Length: 273
Length: 266
Image (cartoon, rainbow over all chains, first blue to last red):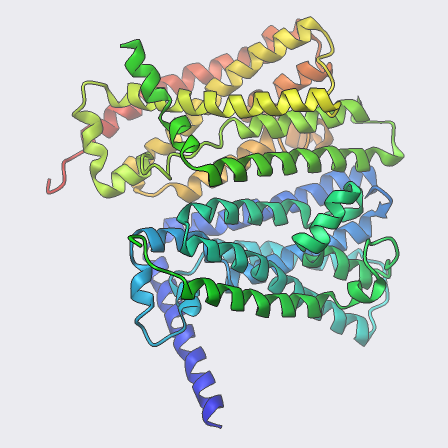
């Protein structure tokens, strides 16, 4: 009971900080609006791809348009959720370089959580809005029966994909604790997941497919779980059982990434060594 | 004088060389984007030989060159704390007006240096693309000339758009989001994500009224042979007009911006 109350109190505090960040952002309404538009604009590139290219070519490789749309839908929605909950890595190098990160070490709150609460990325609202729209569009055109099990798996898939994206960026952001210039890797990775995440990875050469499945697990950020939902479990480059367990893989990878982040934090020495 | 200008223009390049992490990330990033562009367009054409009036090889060449051209303008002075937005925020913008080199000239030199640095990346990517057969050669020597001329004009247009976006900081302090939106609009409306002829007619009409198409879609259309080289004068006339208009506007904004600059403390 005591642990539960502590958990609730921690969440209440986190939500209060988020609300304060939001109120602060509302003081600069022009910037707020531009930021939201920015999130919408970047995710709109997915909608452009889906509506313009899939409309003209009816699919990618041997994947029909409706399945590619489902991959894109799962990907954009999970990215919107990721942006709301975790996307603060871009500021870590600045926090370290300016010495503000050092203050986090002395406060009575987990450091990782403080990084996540240091600001609220307003563009995430735009990301999430487009994600919901794209997901709805994909579901509407999926042309499949929606049993309770399939709906439940789809929800788990979206959460698993969110956690997998967070896990990948957790690991790479942890390098910024020792080398702030590693922030470029985070930006690159986010872009990489964004551009590769919405396509069936089977269009890539074999070596790239293996790399994006077992080394940098982009395949788990939408491709594999969406393929399972669509009933295409063969020719994915992994056994069907692994593809089916994609949401669980996302959760486990996230937990492992947090351990890595904390390990890197324990080696943090500040910018002056 | 020329030596000092060259040294100013090479600041970004030298800064990048000192950061192997950024160089490596940039190289991998570009390689991945090229790989995806080539694989994606090959996969899209798997059931069609021709679409939008271009063949699979032309479409792949277009997509890969578009990726390389987008790389030209990715150098970022933010890491060196030398972007206009940072100087305005920190109050150090005043030093731009105290040097023997004018603010306009300094910005021009840095920007040209950044674009040349980006061009080096694009040139290396282009060479590798040709060597591996991902990119086809220009459809003719005239097409290559038309590509070079129109690309130069396009880069000039992009320079002025970037300048205007940076000048906004003198009034708004921040411009990061505006800049990102313009980058997105540029990539979309210039045909960077997908060639303009794949879009609906209303989108093509809208694009023709804006300067972005002349920065990427027009030059690459010459390269792949979609547009005949003979149409170069008519195709690039709007780019000339945009350069003239933007040059006048940015000049006036420099004057107004200079009047707003005060040293810290007023």
